[in-house]
Image 1 (cartoon, rainbow, N blue to C red):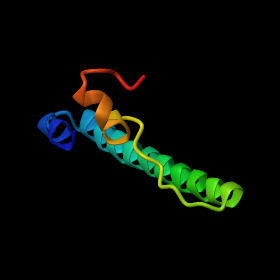
Image 2 (image 1 turned 180 degrees about the vertical axis):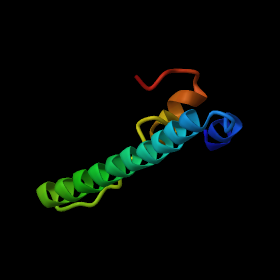
Image 3 (image 1 turned 135 degrees about the horizontal axis):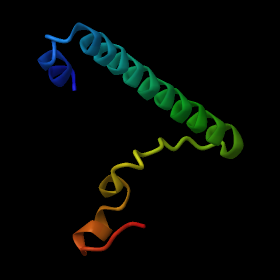
Length: 74
């Protein structure tokens, strides 16, 4: 994404907007990471067992056996 933003550097207003949106997207990602950490800690408090949450956007990590059979994890 950063390369695309730098590619339009002849338009300074668009460049500034693009850089700001890049920074915002990184901060939103960080908020999501913190939310996952909080969820893991809450699950530990409730169950007494630690389980690292997996990335829901990559079902092949959670259910590799389904993907091997050509099935969707949903």
